[in-house]
Image (cartoon, rainbow, N blue to C red; front, side, top):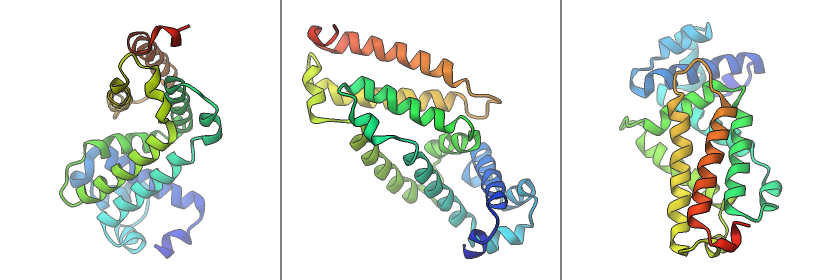
Length: 205
């Protein structure tokens, strides 16, 4: 790993983007170190020198994505939003705007959601739990449920929105372009429908 970190930033990004692209397109099992090396214009031996194994490279990419994505959110701005749906919209915009110029990361993340290789499922399960806690702490507040006609609907609606967001990303897996504006407009329409149907009347004014 030290040899990889000693490379120039440009060279590191070239290798990372090649790995993101290959894993994102083929999944863990089918992506090969040779494919990654060819895409990065380096030798296969160099990839092993930098990361040790395909699994270690994959884990490095997961941790790298986690750090990048968590850094996209302005926690102070989200804390200033008093409504659950507004926080979800604001956090979604932050994430999507931050990933607009990093399509390979988005493709890789979407692929990781669907990954079922036994070699990395334990790592993915731990990471999913960690990101879930981060996401919940970022947007959920105890008082959010009070605005719902039935307070018990708050958590299921939140999970519904998360699945919806993942569905948008999955729909663009492998696509040549990702229309972030169109996705956000559609997401906002769906949020408006949920707000109208689940909130108490006094919170719709």
